[in-house]
Image 1 (spheres, rainbow, N blue to C red):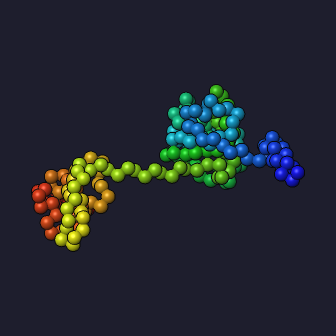
Image 2 (spheres, rainbow, N blue to C red; image 1 turned 30 degrees about the horizontal axis):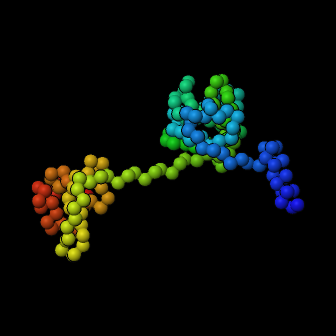
Image 3 (tube, one colour; image 1 turned 90 degrees about the horizontal axis):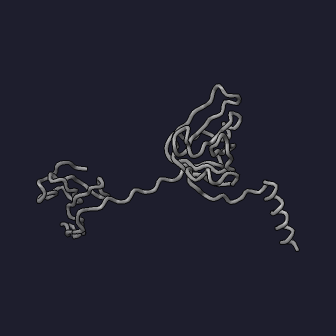
Length: 186
């Protein structure tokens, strides 16, 4: 009986909008298809501006495409700016709230800092090397042979050889000896 009462109270609070609903995560471009729903919308900040001539001095952050065809507008009223904090003017941003339609576009009104976050940057993939060969150095350790890396400086590289390969040598002596010598130490 007690669990039924708890379920009934939770249902009532949910209907009254007093209990948070687990929000789905969607892209800013898809926000227009979820008008009236509670969701987390993530997208690239396309612009940020303050309407200083409007009543209430609202701040607008556009996610997705730039104005006027933006995918989602985030609205922060002046009275809420202290509890919302400073939204970024660039990069990725995720906003949680009820998506409403305003002037033909999708919008979320933001009231506090708990309803927005900057997603953690994904680790960049390690650059691919031109070979997977190793040699045993004077200390008896396996060390990657010099290799080309089209994706930038690979992890563990200690020098750039004259022929453009990266060396992983643990000692300066002999580094890049078969690759034209050391062009730059890293």
